[in-house]
Image (cartoon, rainbow, N blue to C red; front, side, top):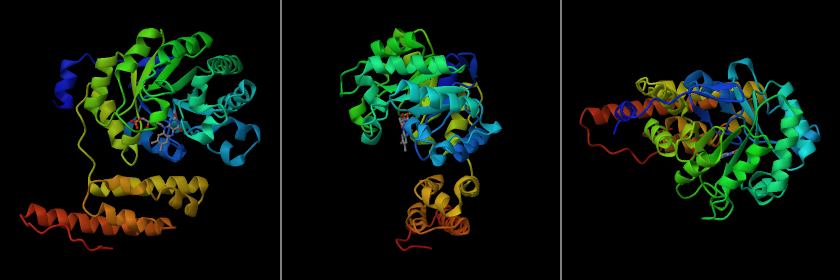
Length: 357
Ligand SMILES: Cc1cc2nc3c(=O)[nH]c(=O)nc-3n(C[C@H](O)[C@H](O)[C@H](O)COP(=O)(O)O)c2cc1C
C-alpha cells in the first residue's frame, strides 16, 4: 500500500508536546554518535524539517573534565530548534552539571541515554547499564529535573537480555522520577542493532505511562512511520539509520504525517550537492581533513543504490580534502548518468566491472 493510500486510511498524526515543547511534525531524528553532529542536524532541519533533533550522545564525565572537544559537540545554532541534547553517565551530580551546561548552550530538552550497549559506555554505569540499576537511573532523572528548567526525557531499550521485556515498569519509575517522555528503541541491549525491532513492545510501554512515547526501530519509509503510529499508539516516531546520507526520508515522513503528498525524490546531482554541503559545514566546525576523514563512510550513502556507488566508496577512503570529494562525486555523476542513459536506451550492457575513476 502506498504512503498516500495508507495515510488516507489512518487518522492524521498529531503534533505533541514534551513539557511545553511542541514536536510538530511528530518525527524525530534519532541520536547517532559521529552522525547527528551540528552539521548534520542543520542539514536535516533544512531538508526534512523534523519536529525534533537529537544530538549524538555526549559524555558527562568528559564535560566534567572540561574537554573542549566534548563541549564543542553541543554546536547548537539558532536553525536547529527544537533540539534535545543527549547525555550519558551515571553520577547524578555530574549528569546534572552537564545538563546545566547544555541548557546554557541552548538545548530545548535534556535526553538521558539509557540504551547504548557499547562496552565503553556501559562500563561507566551509563547507557543501557542504567536498566540494571533502576534506583540510580531514577536518581539521575531526579537530579537533572531539579537542576534545569528544561523537560527531561529518557531513551532506552526493551530490556537488557533478549526476550526479557522490562521497560514498562522501568519507564513508569522514570516518569515518576520526572521524565516527561520516553523514547523506546524496541530492541534488547544485547541485540545491538541486529534482528528486527519488536514494535509491540512500544505499545506496551505506551500503555504503561501517561507521557509521550516516541517509537524507534526500523523506520525506513513513510509507510513504516504510519504503521508504527497506528500499531503502537505512540506519539511520535524516531528515525535513525535510514536518515544517514538520506535527509529526504525525514522530509518524506514529515510530509505524510502532516497529510501532504510525498515530495519528488531528489535527483542524483542534488544528492551529490547535499553530500558536499554536509562535509563543508562539518569542515567549518572541526577542520577540513578531520571532517573529510570522519565522513568517508557516510558520504557515499548519499548515492547508495546508484551504479558506481561502490567505486565512489572505495575511492573516498583516500580523500583528505573537500575538493577531492567534489571531484569524486562529479566523476560518479558522469559515470552513473551515462550508465543510466545506456540502460534507458535499451542497452543490455552490464555495469562494467572496471573502476571508472
Ligand atoms: C551509527 C549509530 C550511532 C548511534 N548512536 C546513538 C547515540 O549516540 N545515542 C543513542 O541513544 N542511540 C544511538 N544509536 C541508536 C539509534 O538512535 C537508534 O536507536 C537505532 O539506530 C535504531 O533505530 P533505526 O532502526 O531507525 O536505525 C546509534 C545508532 C547508530 C547506527
